[in-house]
Image (cartoon, rainbow, N blue to C red):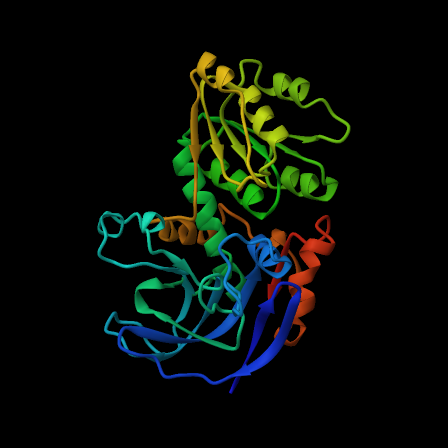
Length: 337
């Protein structure tokens, strides 16, 4: 038997014993070395995740060591890897085009099916990515959220010389800041209400940070980019920040909605039309894992400063509850089975 964290239903989480199975054809058995707690895991526990199934073992940000192989892709026992937690049909047009996040049957480990918040996990060989020898287990677990940020940057069209404004400095916001800088963005403005996260954004390279509780966002933005920003990333999901995002974008600029809105949302179409803005959404990732691994390995994206808390698997309930209870201090919570 192996230990795992299981969310039985909203607000009900426990550490349980589960019986491991042998990997089937094309599968890899991993000893989990690190698994991150994501905001979606917090929503899963709170009963607010729109796609969750119960009961489920959460955990989609994970790294581990190969301990069993039933595939033919060249992975060896003892090899350290990270996992792209998307399960797709493999035959639809989206899958054939490499746009896995568009697969109509896409499922996510730890949301639709059991994930990696356990001592061991079995995953398809096609989802496993070897990591460089110098990359530690926590950095490897952070490849998944970094891939989200890489996908955001591609959807937004961030290139050398771009100016970028980011609403929300949670984990994805802080990673997107670094990915934008790595792409050559010349100015990045970060906006939030949490002082500790803004301070970290400054340390990670933000050109300017704005505490929206007591600073004028428009005035601060105008100081940095008087004509508006090429790209605005909305990572809060509130109508107020969605409206502000449209306001901060330059004429002909782009606004990318990263956060899932809290319920229905409306926006000023007249402003969208008048400024001829490009409005886009982004979901998950597709072929972004290799780039995410390279950025972390090269030191262009620093993930260790984001990790604020570490727990044992036996402390899974506390680990999953902490980000929701103390968002100012808990940026990335990591579980080390």
